Length: 157
Image 1 (cartoon, rainbow, N blue to C red):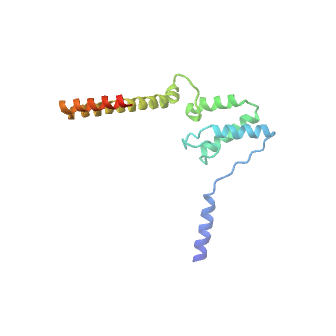
Image 2 (image 1 turned 90 degrees about the vertical axis):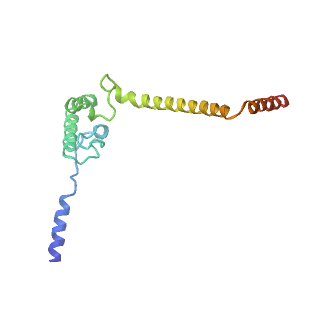
Image 3 (image 1 turned 120 degrees about the horizontal axis):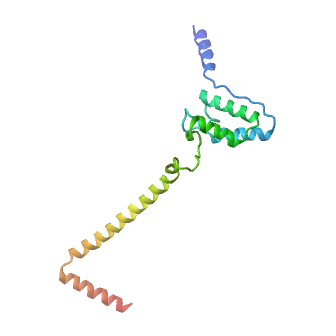
């Protein structure tokens, strides 16, 4: 009984192992281009993983497509343009700067500057509120005495 369970466990566990792609490249330059392209293109299914690291079926298809296009002698730009045409700008980790992707490029800087501006405004308001509240708490006699003390101190310096 235990042997049957162990045998079943062994048989089912091998089915979960991922398949490893093996490609034969003509040159080392072609191999380097393949790895560069598969590292800079995003898997459409995994969303935050490049196709080199993804085990999704679509990532396998994209790697196979890159290999085929490299074998045909296409340039990196042609391959990336094909992938963008097929899957949209999402497939790139670094989308090109154009009217549709300007928000992706500039929104972080706008939010950072807006946050800094809001922080500066809040600090200045708090400082002015503290100064105003300090002045309000002192009576007229206390303010005059404080002013006299401050004038004496500046004369001593």
